[in-house]
Every structure is written in C-alpha cells, then in structure tokens.
Length: 575
Image (tube, rainbow, N blue to C red; front, side, top):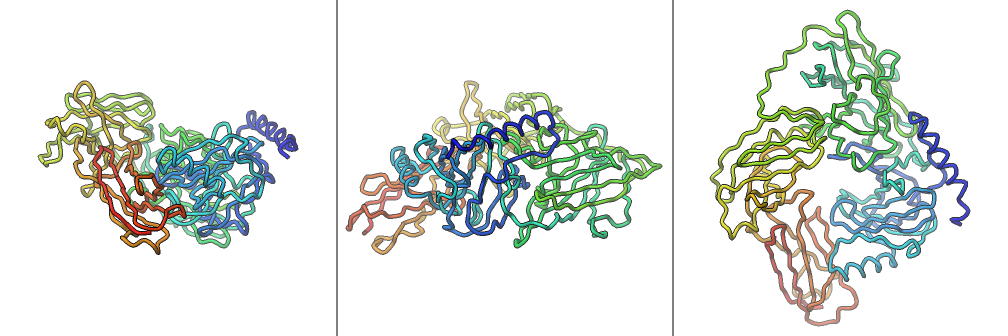
C-alpha cells in the first residue's frame, strides 16, 4: 500500500518547487490524504495559530469526551511516543510516507500494545515520564486504525484531542485545516476593537487610542469614520476572533491583510510556523493588553526584533505615514481558513502635534539586535542577540532585604511588563551564605504578591550563583529547606474495594520551565510501581493491577524537590 503512493509524493515535490519560486502564493497541501482522527463531526475548540500565553497554538483542538476513540489519520508508523505530566501529556506521532507526520496529544490511553511498550520502558527506568522512538516496523498503522483514546492529560484544561500535522523532516507544524478536513464553517470572523499607536521613527510607542468597532452594512467601521492622531506615524492592532458553526468558542483567525488606500502594506498568514519562533507571539500581540486584561490584539505592524515568518507583506513594517492635510483610507480584511472574511474600513489623518516623549531614565541601553552585558560586583547579566523585541532603555538598581531567607541584594532588573524572547544569563553574588546551605540555594524570581519562582542555579568559581532566566523583574538568592508535601486523596488502610490510590504532592516554590520540578518514586513491598502524574492537579495515581495478591502490603512513596529536599510516606494497606 505504501508503494502505491508515488503520485502523491510527486505532487508534493512539485508543489514545494513552485512555492520556492512563488513564496507569496497560497500553500498547496494534499486535501484528500488525511482523514479525521475521530468518527463523527469535527467540532473545534481551538484553531491553528491561535494566540496563547507565550506561544502560537500548533494544531487544532477537537471537541469530545473522555475515552472517545482516536484513529490514525493516514497510513504510516508510530515514530514517537511521549508521556509527560504537563505539556502534551500522553502523545503519539505517526510518520507518513508523503513527507508529513500527524500528532495526537492529551490522550487518555494508548492501545494495549503501545501501552505495554511504554510500561516496559517506565519499569526499566522507574520513571513515569518517558520519550520513546520506536522502529518503523514496530507499530505500523493504517488509515482508520484505532490508536488511542481522547483524554485530558498534560496541560489540557478539558477533554479534547490536540491534533497536528507537521513536516516530518523539519518538525514545522502546518495548519491542519488546509488539508481538507471536513469542518463546517460559513461564519466570518468577528471584529471587536481597534488600537491605534502613535509612533516615532524608531517604532516606539508614544501613546495610543482604543476604539470599539460597529457594524456598517456587511462590514465594520468606527464611529465618526475618521481617526485623528497627533503623530505623523501610526500603527494598529486588531482584536478579532473566528467563530464556527455548531460551537460557541472564540477561535483564532487564519490571515489578516491591511491596506493603505489600494496598497497592501501588511499581512500575516497562519499556514505554518516554527516551534523555534513561537515565543515571538509576545511581539506579535499587544503584550501590555494581554498582561493587564488578557486581551489578544493582533499587532498590524512589526516591532524591530520580531522575526516571525508568518508575515508575507510588510511595507514600511506596517507603519502608516500620515499628513495633516489629507486623510488616508485604511482597510483590514480578516479571514478564516475556509475563506470567510470580515472587512473593517476607516480613515485616519494627523491632527495636532506629536507628544513629547519624556526623557528616559535608564542605566543601560540594550539594543535588540546585539548582545549586551551588565557586569558589576554583585550581579552579572548576559543578554544574547535577539533576546529583546525592541531596544530597551533598561533601569537597574538593587536594594537590601533583611528577611531571614534572602542571601543577596534584591536586583531590580527593569520591569516584568517588558517581554523577553530568549533565556538570558544571570549570576548573583551572595552577601552571606552559610556553607551548609549552599546546596539549598537558588536564584529566585520575586513577583507580585509574594510570588517566588525557583530559577535554579549553580555556584561558579567566582562565588556567584548562576542560572538562566526569561523574565525581567526582581531577582535574589534564596534557600529552600522545606520538603514537599504528600497528602492522601484516595488512600486508607483498607484498599480492598479501591481500584487505585492517589496522593496530592506539592512544593512551596514552583520551578521555572528550565528547572526540574518534583521527582517521585513509589514502591509496594520494595518493588517499583507506576504512579501517573497529573501536574496541573498536583496529583499522582497508581492503578492496581491483578498482580498484587490479597493481604497486607507496604507502600513507600518518596517525593523530592529541585534542591533535594525529600518527603517520605510509608504506610501499610490491605488488598
């Protein structure tokens, strides 16, 4: 059957060849190759490229319930299996012979042969989280084969299937709705609000206006038709969502075109993006609006350090030049993947004088396109090239905090309201650190409301604790001497009528994404047993198998945090 597919491969190669020479043309993907991974209608809770916290959504979210069967979308073989307490949760990837792979995430359970394969590796490693790469001949699948059950594992907030299509070689995710999946959608996107930013020649924001949009005929407009700006350069951002038949979700759009007069000056198209660039989302949206109000505005001009590949046309980076004498007609066209479109039209001109930007108070100037170093006797910072989305006039100072658990100055590194794209190096000198506490020390990010994030750290030869961070804000050295907590959720002495036992495990300090979280190890009568970890609920669960004989047994559960503090629960129980 695989040998019968060369025409599809030939068409794919031809399409890719044409795209190389005509990059602005619409992408051409095989529209009859992949079938739906579920039976019944495809109802979506999320679309490809949706704006999410710190990332673009890399697939579609298919509605359903716990245990709904999930099927292979096409012939191929299972090439990757991952079990994760967060993120994708239970995850399968299938490689297909046409150059694409499909991914299935947040699964409740795998089919028995895959489940046994995973369990054998979990037993061998005595770990819950595993990532496996089976041979091509281990788990071949045919289109429509049952592979798993829909679930709510990992970072999922409710039962659904996260489904992706990727280029196999590059791992670049593609918009599944461009492959002919049968999703009913004849509703155009809905436009809600428009922002106008007054800009200088460095694309720095001098001020802004917010406008509610009104329906005008079949499209959208603003009250009064003409916007007035004090500056001769402006940029825009649009709050817009897509809606589909039979669902109430506010999903993301596929593309947005911005016209000045008859000229296309800006476009983004969410047909694909690279995982390496997904955090540029924070430059694509209005980060202040997201941070303060959880509002998602698509920025219609590019910040200097925004290197996203989704932009197809950028004339003057989407910045609109105005005059005092003549208004400019603007048009924005938002589309979904089915081609349903909504149009916003308005006029804009300059009136008045540009606001005077107050003189900046800063200690360091950090260009967005150069590496920068801050080096003083108590802190060292290294910002690689492209850490920032635009030039930063960075304010820095430090203060002394005499709290018992703080062992350095508190370093105030500008403001957490300014987003950062990449990890930067941070090293802090301890002002006083007892030798017996050094292995319990970590670099702490100190947020609002006494929030503390463990950013890890290792001591260097200069006596600094060093790590990496991905937020600006307040940092210091703290120690963690408190073991994790273990609280029974479903555990008692008599477990003869229970199919599982579960515990809530928690720690006093959450850890950053580059720092390991809680580690745990469980045995019954000295033999390792699998505890499945749901990180979003802080819960571990062991499901009893038929191999445990009746009678009295001993459970030993050890939970360890990032600095090695350990909590042990040891109890007897009956089966």
